[in-house]
Length: 252
Image (cartoon, rainbow, N blue to C red):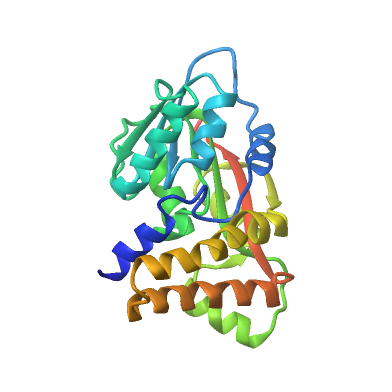
């Protein structure tokens, strides 16, 4: 089994595929000032197994296109939506975030938690601009430095893993360059990483390894995940996920 297949198997039954929480999704929603008196057209890009999609469907009227490249994640999302009576509101959609099947200025809300790094922050917000209606809102979370100074080893680690990591001011500047009007910003608390993401991940390690016969590839994947956890535990004071909320102006 190749690495992608192992990653899918490891994450497909997880509640979430990245740091976050229902409370922080709700917090981000308060910045959007969306009109809840009419049906909205929304997209959750890089939705994974649907942690954010399910919250949005409960809170906002309209339909949500839940977009992910991996059909296994969408299958899990579909089952979860059905189990809570939201399958008529959430439309699983297999697509690349670089080739989204939406019409120009067709969406009131684009949401993406912990996924835009696949394209890169500025490339993503630039590409998705066309799909937002004038007055539409973009909400994305992105790995962000919490401090202008940090240990050299940490800088080297993230410059290798994701060179576009930056401070919040850089991300807000990118939004402004692309024509958005920033509406709000906050950092996810550490509990979104340690309690909601890493603790459930660690609880899955043993079953995952047993399921794959403790193969070399499975052990390598677990080792990578353990390393990520260790880096965050050691250096959480210096980086986290920033949540950015911005609006496409009515007169673009």
